[in-house]
Image 1 (cartoon, protein in one colour):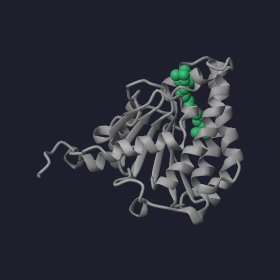
Image 2 (cartoon, helix red, strand yellow):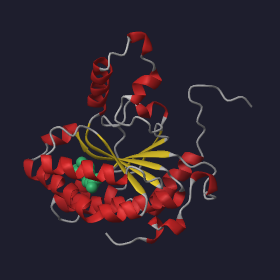
Image 3 (cartoon, protein in one colour):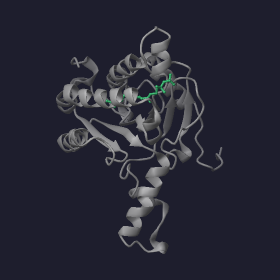
Length: 252
Ligand code: FPP
C-alpha cells in the first residue's frame, strides 16, 4: 500500500469541523458487493475482482477520513460465504492475510484502529493470529475505526450475544437493549447511521441486523471496485439531505 495523502495526520478532519455536509454519519457500514461482476465484465477471474475490491478499501477509507466519518464497518466475508467454490474461499482468505501483512504497519502509523466483528473460530489459525495481532497493535488508535466484518453473520452475532449473556449469568430482568448491544461484536461502537450497498441489490444480507434498526440505507448499482470518493460523497450528501426521525414525529 502506498502512503496516500488523505490518511496523513495533517489532513485529519472530523464530523464537527467538516464543512462539506450539514451532517456527517459517525458510523458507516458498507456491503461491498459486485466484485465478481466487475471482474466478469472485464473477462477476468472473480478473484481479480476481489483483489480490486481489497485495493478499493484503502481509497474509501481515505475518503471517509477526509469527509469526517469516524467509523467504517466493511462486510468482508459472511458466514454464508463459506458455501462459495473452495478456490474462491481460499483465495479470499489469502487476500485478507496478504492485506494484513502489507498494510498493517501503515494503517497503524496513520491512526487507524482495526476491529473485528465475527467469529474467529473456523478461520485458519495463522490468519486468526494475524487478526488478533492487528487488533492488539491498533487498539489505542483514534483517527478512524475500521471494523472488518469477517466470518460475520448478523444472526450468528445475536446467538453469540445470547450465549455470552447466559454464560455471564445476567438475570432476565437485567437484559435491556443497551445491555444486549454491549454483548454484540460491535459492543462499544455506536450503531451505524448509514448503510451503503454497492452492486445494485436492495437487501441487508444478514449484515448488522440489530445495529441497523434505524440506519439510513443507500444503494448504488456501482460495483464495489469502482466505488470511489465521488460515489461516497454522493452517498453522504444523500444522507445529509434525509430527515431522520427515529420513529418520532418532527416538531415544527
Ligand atoms: C461481494 O462481491 C464481495 C465479497 C463477498 C467479498 C468482499 C471482500 C473483500 C473486498 C476482501 C476483504 C479484505 C479485507 C482485507 C478486509 P461478490 O463476489 O458477491 O460479487 P458479485 O455479486 O458480483 O458476484
